[in-house]
Length: 467
Image (spheres, one colour):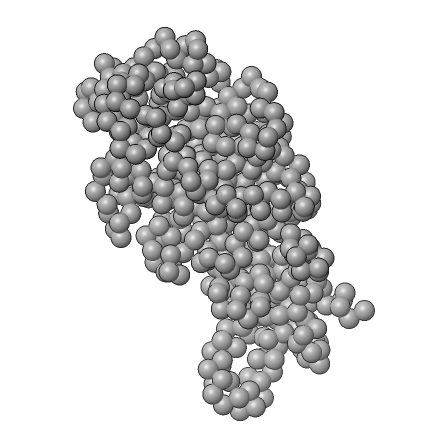
């Protein structure tokens, strides 16, 4: 990719027009010749460079663009220059361990990335003949995930849940697993993160020891909707670069993709588009698809995506949630009821699913144990109302045995995390899937019927706790 021109040289040689209207982060620019959509334009104000992205052609002389900086100081008559290309970002192997913004500029008070290579954030998805299919399990060391909703290597996973149920903590544990188990790297896209959240997350990642294998790209909540709308593409461009150059396992984490949809809705309203279903933008499914279709794996390396999805009012039928859901391979539902019982990770084992959950992919042994665990937990859920009203003593001997085993399985599937060890004082544990399967099979057979429930809570394997 060619270097982005500097404002002192090429930008000032190609004035494209002037600002005629300013509506918050949207500006209307009068031009002699219209630049193409997604072209990056710029202006200079008080020795600062303001970047814009072309989003809409109004007529043969006017266009609407979204500012990627604050709009303070913009005024009618300001000269706008053409950069000659869409937004490009600097890419370099030294980006790992760094905290960057949408332009690839440092947010960690470090030196700027030194590179001769720039990449377009709007690059096309790979041709189908260059991409590879998915179908291999990516182990995370988290019992409930590996057992009931396994990750797909090179696939897309969604973490669905409301506020405060543990999405970010679970994401950090995935990043730790990729760095330690698979010797891979992670790219974290903070879409609309609160400044406090971003600051805390950066320090947590450093404490967990995975920052050297992690790149963090933030578009914060107080920034322009244009930044929050494009920060995911910027981070995804870095993930593609690391996949192609390092040829390693790359975990692409987006927290929170719902804020990407919200930013798109803001941009759509500012551009004057009529809202569609439930007030969302009419281009919702297209914008989500443009992002998701670029998350691909090649013969050189794989990008595995984990996306936190805020569920408004815990309504899984929300149009934004449905649009995201249609692209996912694994769905992890985080339940407020589980969190209220102290079950962490608060994964709902009955609603969470994966397209790898079949005998052909997992093998008969894994599949049959997973189905047995689900059957026990489902029967327990059916009997909860009866237990509440009449007591567990009123159940038949068979149901009583199922309920006791289900309660122990529910507690066994909790796990202390590496990323929360500094807060809880309990060291994190990574559990191989073979140990999880052996323990769950023993629970289903009744080998642990005499073990108290509290001995199953927040442990690794049963062999460790019974020593």
